[in-house]
Image 1: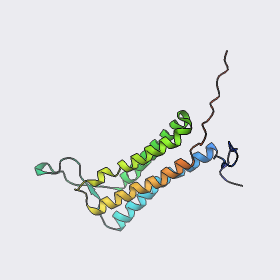
Image 2 (image 1 turned 45 degrees about the vertical axis):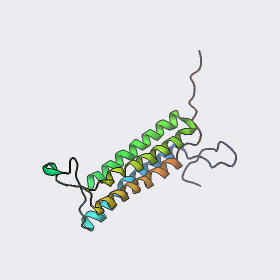
Image 3 (image 1 turned 90 degrees about the horizontal axis):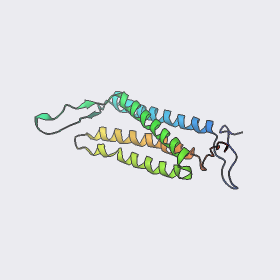
Image 4 (image 1 turned 45 degrees about the horizontal axis):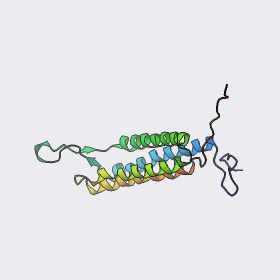
Amino acid sequence: MSDLGTAPAAGAGRKPEPSVAARRRVRALAVAAAVVLPLLLWTAAVPIGGHPLEVSFGMRTGALAPEPMGLGAAPFGLVPLVSALLGWALLALLERFAGRAARWIWGVLAAAVLAASFLPLTDPALNGVTVAVLAAAHLLVGAAVIPAFLLTSARTPRRVPRAPAG
């Protein structure tokens, strides 16, 4: 017997949809993977590999050029956590109010956000190792969250019981 606790299918030949509990479990595991995978990458690159990851913000010319700031483990854990939880919340809202279009809308938005997350990596002040590690971290988070959320998204709109007229 499957651990997914599936609900009956809405039509012939369709795969049964996962139950709400199974959806939550898979999505929670995806969020956990989105946090753990970049942290493992950071551990391999910085403490083990000895490659400091540095970024700088603000003006980069003249006397106002900022000192580079080292990237520790915290951004590699907190940013993916917040991003994945926001993505989950948005998908839940879309599933609630957008019906069948929720998966498509969320998928397009998720791909756009992932693509936009690479824009800061075009900064010429970043060194090659920093760009490579950050790009890989973005891809790991996207690979952990996007397929899991899309695969667990309801394929048919949930029916909300109406209050009796009266």
